[in-house]
Image (cartoon, rainbow, N blue to C red; front, side, top):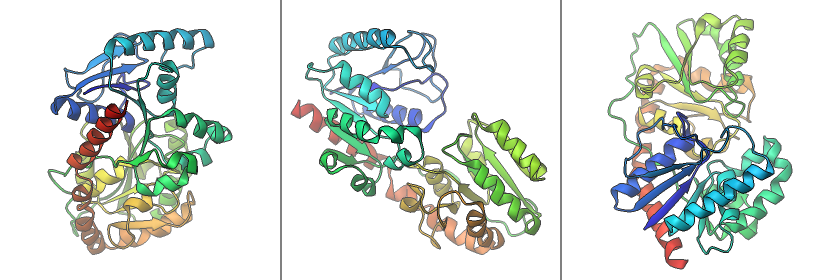
Length: 369
């Protein structure tokens, strides 16, 4: 089977979309399939994550991939992609996220080449972003997809009825950890960890404010936020203004994230919305109980309160988040018990199951074309 993937930008991007796309492409190559990739990157782009050498990476190299192109440039890009697709003759094209999908689908009109949309966020994203103003148009364009993948069964019903028949839930793979976070009652310094992009979606201001409420009662705890992004300076200023700058560390993006999980005592993800929150799943796989907001898409699907973590009421309220964190920060025995339960996530979301589901879907799409 020949599969062509379309993604926006890979050049040294350490994001969840890029990581999942590369993991899927690598697995399909290992299974003997012919895989190629098309991105908007410049000619010298390099991936952040290891990518199989057998994958043919076609870099568009037409202008700045991080900027919105004008109409003339978009037309030229579509012509380039259509020509490439005809040369590649894929059995299926997979667009990761709506933008790359729509680009591919419009470029391939009347070619007979089927296009699959891999949606990487819950539709709840539209409740939090300006794209929500175009909700109806976005859903209508999804009808161009031969199939649509989402990450949890519960997301299907959040889409219009006219799309639901073509939606297939496929969860992200969760890899078993090689070593786990080990509870230590005598530990002098404890770490509340979060891992993610410092962005509007991840809503780290809520976590910083929640931690500030807890600082007086927990002098032995530090907040460590691993990642980088456009809100870094504003978040650091917030910590300064709250008087907790010395209690918060910002190491930036790190390559060996498992080291961070193993050194932590508790994990928190304060996101406004997610698709499949990879960092949450990875933290659990390393034996960390997790706290997140109940009304953040993806959190309630992974966190069972009192079992492998806790859910704060609502979505975005710092006092509610502090109230959910407080009992776990206070009780090391509860953290240890929940951490053991959290590890089971790697059994539920085995990589082989996720990649089998993808292979089966793509095979069905290819056979039907």
